[in-house]
Structure formats: C-alpha cells, structure tokens
Length: 214
Image (cartoon, rainbow, N blue to C red; front, side, top):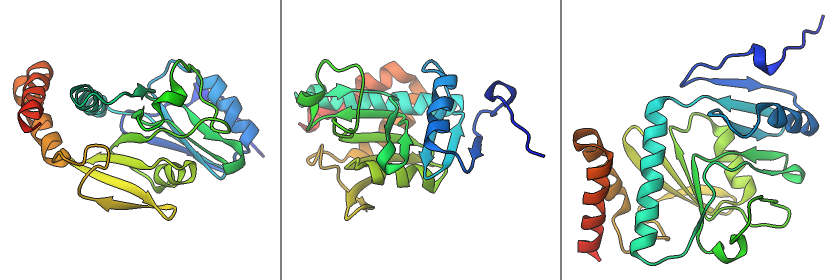
C-alpha cells in the first residue's frame, strides 16, 4: 500500500538532509512551489532524486562571511558583478536543479543586470558559486551539468577551489577570478579572525589586508 506524505508533515533537523527518490520533473516543480521562496532549506535535484538540506547556524554564518569576502574583493578590484544569493537554478532538459549558498555573475554580469528571475534556457549559469559543507555528490553533479565554471567549497575550515574542465570539476590552487591573490590563505585567515574578534572587525581587517596586497 502506497503512503503519500505532505511536506509539512516532514521535519529535517539542522545539519541533516532528506532524500526523495523517483521524482518526476513536474513533482519536483510542485515541491518547489510548496516549499516557497522564503525558507532556510536548500535543494538539489538530479535525475529523479531530490535532496532537501537544512543548514546549521554555523553553516549560515560561514556562507554569509564568504559571500561578504567576495563582495569586498570585487569592490576593491573594481570588478562589476551581480549577486544572486541562493537563487534556484534549474533546467528541465538537464533534469537538474540547485540552490547555491551564494553565487555571483561576474564575466556575465552585463547579461544579468536588472533581472529578478533566472531562466537557464536563456540565461547563463552563475560564474562563481559557493557551497559550505558539501555533503553529497548530487550537488557537485548538478553544478557540473548546469555548467557553473568556478565552484568554491568550504569544508572543515578549508577552502577548495574547483574549475569545470571537460565536464568535471578539477581542484586548483588559484581562483581565475582573483588570480593575483592567495584566496585560500586569505579566507582561512578571516574565518579564523571572525571567531576571535567578531564578523565586522574581521571583515575590516580583511579589506585592509587586501588593499596592502594590491
């Protein structure tokens, strides 16, 4: 006997994830609509499997800090961008969908200026996406399928930079977006400082450090 559950009957504790298998695209769209846009849960969908993740407070603090760091770098280097946060990116013909922790249009910022909705049938994927504590291969597969060229993964207090090459992500030591800066060292430095002296002083110190390097 099949049992149908409503999403409101399910609870995903912080730091945990819920997997739903054998889900058609139309069902995935219906779940997105039911979940709504104003929520803390993140989704990843690939070939019939939907992953719903509930981030922890620590996760949210780290992803906001990383987003702030990128914004400071772009501002100090006078690089234009459009920030799309945790927007839902999906393509039916690729049977894939994802919500990054943070994402930025940099090389393609002109094409996204003024837009409030994203259609990947017409629009490019974000140029840079950030994920904190990636827990499944599903997320990485979706980013690769959607063609996100640069992915930052912050795990276990370390930043990993991946570039999409030949349809797969390859780890690199330097971000092509900020080729002259030791991004991984700077991120480790400011994340450690934020725990000791607080977010705002750490970000101010980070801006000064970047300006000294430049």
